[in-house]
Length: 337
Image (cartoon, rainbow, N blue to C red; front, side, top):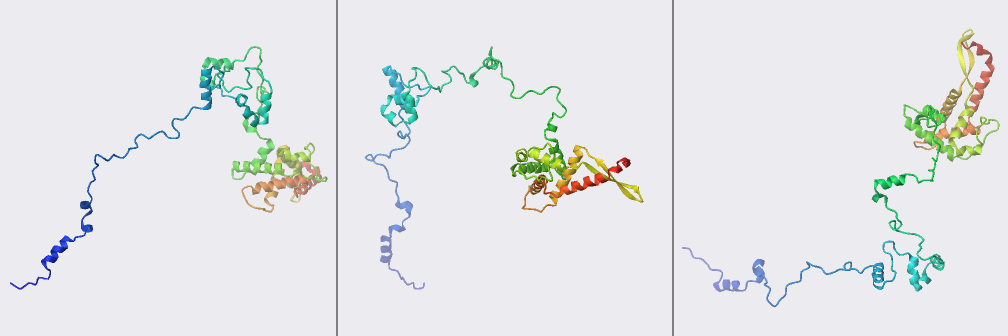
């Protein structure tokens, strides 16, 4: 057996076991459950909290005054109706000095006893709310009282039978409908209606036009200063004043030698307006663009209409040229067919 060296003395190991630090002991062994003795009292619980600031409130001042009036037999406040401020100030002399001047004047005026200027209760006045009425009471209210004739209608009733154009289809002015249809593109009627509304709005907000005496409006038009007040009449005056009275039809080969013969053909009201509207729309498209937005075309059309009324538009020369040509070719009317 080989020889072994003992490097640690036995007494040193024993001394290490005696001087072990308490930090080396586990926490579960160091902490012990503390028991409550008989002398100590448990902590109070909060199962039933005491009354707070919003609990156990005092009654209202009016309720106290009503209870006191029942005991003393004096007249107190009426809780159902509420007490007017005038009655409260009559009992409070110091409050009358600080009251508004209007209330002070009402207090100085004498009123008969037992009367009130107003009532806040419908039940005391004998009025029952509609929700609490029976069906028979409602029928009684609907019947007119004897001796009292029912009031007539605010507007007169239409006479029967109704006219043909007395329907929703003809609710707009004829020129408004025709102008909207001619301005419509690709079947988008709502867009054309929006542009028409913008045009009328622009005419209504524009200043009164200055009419050129050499290019007057059609007879029967309203005064120039009144045109912005009625944009529909503004549009009618512009279109009817510009509308030509005739159109020129070229009959090929009728003049001999392969030359066309120009024949003037008169137009009715709808045809005249259509020709004028087409001229106005073409001139508006050629106008210089100012700005951007979905209402740009409507603004250009409105500016062209104002130019027509003021006589600044080049369409007047176009109209006068057609009339001059028609007057010169009036001898060819017999060759229409």
